Amino acid sequence: MVAVNVVRADAATAFYSAPGVSASGTTSVSTLLFSYKVTDELAPLVRLGIVSNSPPAGDSGLGFMNPVVGAIYSLKLAPALRLGLFLGVTVPVGSGGGNAPSPEMGPTRTAGIYARSAMDNAMFAVNDVTIFPGVGLAYIAHGFTAQVEATVLQLLRVRGDEAQPDASKTNFTAGLHLGYFIVPMLSIGAELRHQRWLSTPVAVQRDASRATRDTTTVAFGPRGHFKLGETMWLRPAVAFAMGLDDPMMASEHKILQVDIPFAF
Image 1 (cartoon, rainbow, N blue to C red):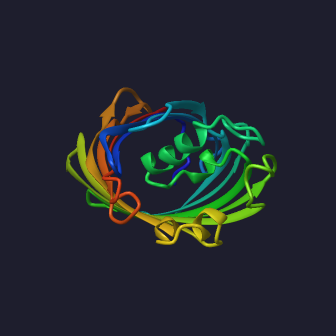
Image 2 (image 1 turned 90 degrees about the vertical axis):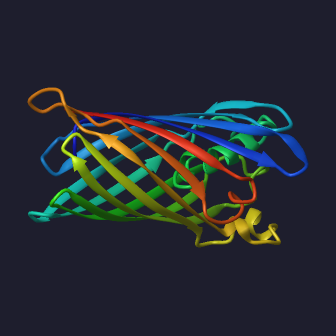
């Protein structure tokens, strides 16, 4: 979490299976983020997204995700230590909300959640306003980066009370990132991610296995670092991600993610 001027495009494609079906399913989630520093420490941001899903059986779905508006406040605690504070709010205008949603959008949103390693739940909760504060701490020195982040998400239903039984829900996400520069233009990184429902939504209550209570995933891959001008950097990355527990392990989720941030 660093305050920067950046335009960031991100695309994740997930491949998965379903019990008793020979064909595989494919989910694609694309997001676009804009951030601009108003001071050296503070950067408001906007994030938009779209999701599509072609399941192994049933109808395909395509829709917009909830936009996010928020801000990052970054502090340098020491030459190698940075603290980032984040506050975000979703705008509940995503596709498939209300009391008469399209039947294919529910499975599409669920598939999109897993394509994003269950770390962007707020953008798929189209009936809810979500307020989510977060904190991150990073150590950056000698070509090595270690970063931890944690976010609490409070979801409040504002539409679709007949289709969605939960008036409110509380979710938690956390991540650990380790990275190392092989050469100045190339680094490698790995992430461990975890999300957990702190409250017990109806969907979790109905899941006898309780596998939907939390999700743990891992991701790893290279990132390029190319200086294009005095203050301009292009840092493209590709990563492979997979679940470490059910339901993502049971559905054999494999995720390919491409991330292209342009900082200026």
